Image (tube, rainbow, N blue to C red):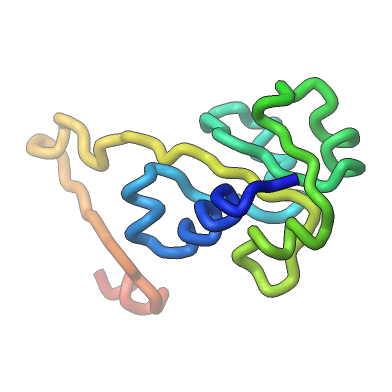
Length: 122
């Protein structure tokens, strides 16, 4: 059973400003969350899934991290129009985008490239 505060917290993460403030992003979907659990490269703060999904994919997960939810609760916390069976809250990485080698080598930094032709022109 999820508390109203937890539901509101997850729903607020739909906004970019809230994600950056909290340092957390949402990963949704059976396959995406399963791959995230296999990689173990990211710090997972919380994991929500149906009881069947949790038994199948993470039977050894700590009880504090994994929470079994009903499909109705999953619909409430999901940011998707058709929620799947799992949702995870993951800490954002704290990497610096550039290294010290920037002054000695040629590097291009791109942001929000939407058209592949624009990248080809560069």
